[in-house]
Length: 68
Image 1 (cartoon, one colour):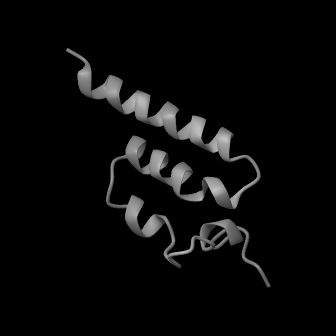
Image 2 (tube, helix red, strand yellow; image 1 turned 30 degrees about the horizontal axis):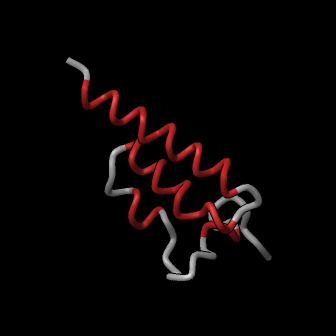
Image 3 (tube, one colour; image 1 turned 180 degrees about the vertical axis):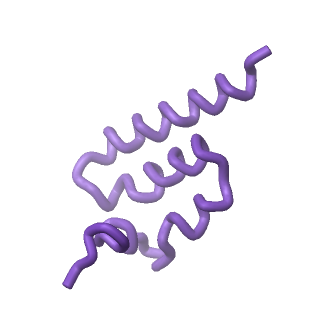
């Protein structure tokens, strides 16, 4: 039985066999989310949408870091 909450198929389908959360839990929110979308973009239906989401989080992090 698939656990859609704790271990959805696209969470553990990366060729490395590693779940993305293993890495992203050591990052800040924006960068962790960007990596999450990049990590799984080819494992879901719309890679371009996920890459745009990653870019959104990266842009947000750049803005956060460049505030004066």
